[in-house]
Length: 339
Image (cartoon, rainbow, N blue to C red; front, side, top):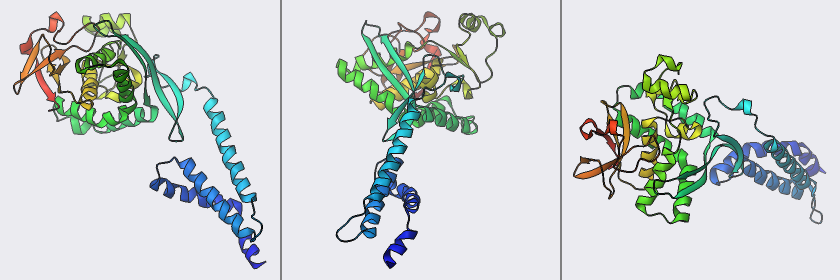
């Protein structure tokens, strides 16, 4: 009787509280979600309590049944919440209409993805398609980190800013990189074909201006900008540091200008082992990609290597070609390489 009185204080609500506390400890040792860590601890404690509260001949199953009911209720509630459509009104205004939000499970936890269903054709008539995603939490956390480092980058070169954006964002592009790898393997693409696929994936995204200040009405800009904004009032995103979006943000809202695009391609191709560069022109106020790979056309020499220029802001530009009004190679200089 003394034992049972002692166990009376160790009630089922108590082991729920203990399980909540211990689950974070278990999670640090095993690669499982917090929910499954909680479930593991709760069932273990329920089994121990049933053992202590019973006797040698009879096991007290009620604690295990209680735990099963609690865990089942939690899973049922999560399923109901996941089934509720995400309201359009909850979407942030800077997220493109081509992006949709979708709930998914990752390691047992419910997360929200920003997804885009894409189909595009490269410059040689090959068509590719895929579902590309980033985590919504990564979208907001990467933007916050970028905005918090503005003062640090004000005195640095463009190359160092680009390298920071590529390095800090590449780990959060893992779902994009995984989908690109799937496309590469399923289509058996060689080194050049894969680079072509990646660049045209970005070229296919409609151009948007990225400004440090607010986006203003079209008539307040010079003609080249005004013409585009008159046709597409949504082709602009403002209040972005240095007028360049970080790669994860670009994949989360599909609004990017020249260096926004060159940086993400630089990050992707660097991840896959390419010798890649970014070239800027103060004269043209433009940025293009540079790729050291067997090719033909316009190139810039650096350390004995030819980096062939690649325009990223519009479709149909192949490696080694530039728009005629940007074509003087003397106005271009390399600001960053990954070698």
